[in-house]
Length: 89
Image 1 (cartoon, helix red, strand yellow):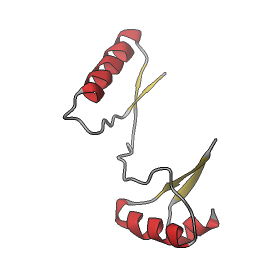
Image 2: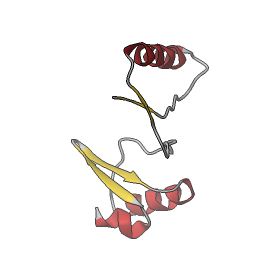
Image 3: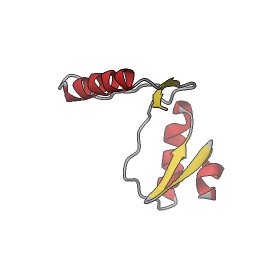
């Protein structure tokens, strides 16, 4: 995946079934187009919000409340994506 770094990607994360290419939103199309020209195929290619910092939820009640909130938001037809900055301890 040196091709991605040469195209301007910031990082490459190896996944079980492929790679995740990390880049700035400004460079997204440039990196995507460069990889397409080299023959790479994408399962998905989109810009996602990634938190700079995370909040750890350690109490079970907090975790259950957050999971319920996220489930409710994801089930709402008017909501396209749900992003958060919490992680479970």
